[in-house]
Amino acid sequence: MDTLIPIAARIADRLKARGETIAVAESSAGGLISAALLAIPGASAYFIAGAVVYTPKARMHLMGLTREDVAGVRSASEPYALILARTARDRFSTTWGLSETGASGPTGNPYGDAAGHACLALAGPDLEVARTLETASPDREANMRAFALEALSLLEAALG
Image (cartoon, rainbow, N blue to C red):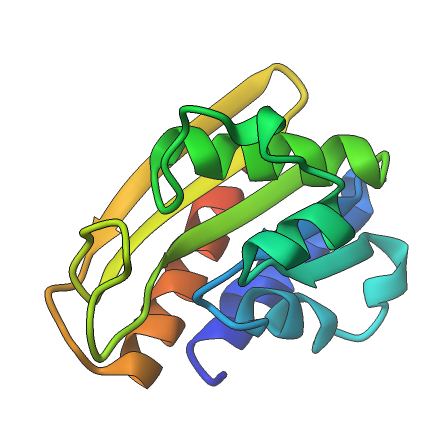
C-alpha cells in the first residue's frame, strides 16, 4: 500500500476540490484500488462504492450485468473494462467509474492471457479511456499492486 497511498491522496484532494465522486469495479487487483482510495481520511466525500467483480456471478449480482450485456466481449479486454467502468459510474450515479480486469497469476486466465495481463478503464464526464498493462510476471501480489497503481495512475492523469 505504500506505493498506492501517495497517488490516492492526490486523487482524493482533486476529487474533493472538484466535488466529484467515484465508483470502482475491480477484479484481479482484489480490492486494492478501493482500499487505497478509502485509506485517505475523508473518503466518504468522494468514494461511493467499490466491488470486486471476480466471477460472472459477481458481475451479475454486484454490477447488474447479464450475459447479454457482455455478449461477444471477452473478459480481461479493454472493451470489457470499459463496460465495467461505465456500469460502475452509472449504477452508482458517480462522476467517475474506474475498472480493472485481468490475470494476476501465477498462471494466466481461461481467456488466454498470461499472468500479469490487466485491462483498465475509466469512464467520466466527456472521457472514456482504456489501456492494457502487461507485467510479464507470475508474481501474484506484485501484479495486484501493479494493476492497482496503473488504475490509479489512469484516474490521476484524467483529473489533471
